Length: 163
Figure 1 (cartoon, rainbow, N blue to C red):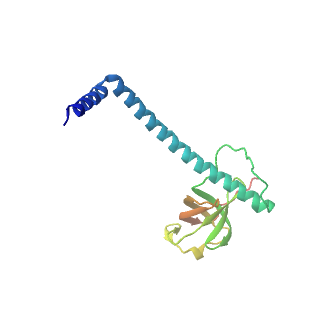
Figure 2 (cartoon, rainbow, N blue to C red):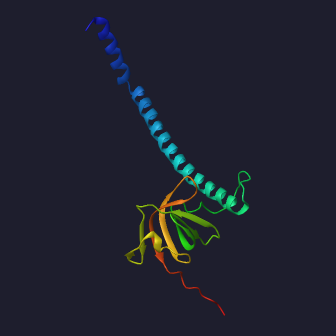
Figure 3 (cartoon, helix red, strand yellow):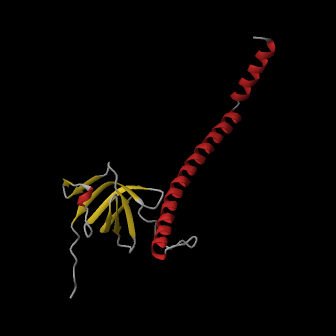
């Protein structure tokens, strides 16, 4: 190694050996980690908000027959993107529609990998009937529907009447 190269290597070692430079590099790395974590949280929030928006947009298209621009629905929280429980109102395989307690409807998509149960026994998709009660777990798709991974069917809950 030439004398000039040795001087350059020695200068680099002395610069990185200084405490101020090590502290500055540690702070910069810490800021990058925090930025990454913040960005990951933003991506998750954006995904959940976009699902809620698409679901609301599909609701207006279904009942008004057309989309009329962005809508703002004031709610306590987002709609349940990963599951639904309620009465089945329409069956058109491979999809069915569930009426949920907040007076809306969710469309569920069944695939070949969806596990279907009635009580403890396995059933086929053709066993799904209107007025059954369904509990669905799955993932949201790009059209405001739920791609079911697990469906449990039960008879409708008993209704009570007050006198």
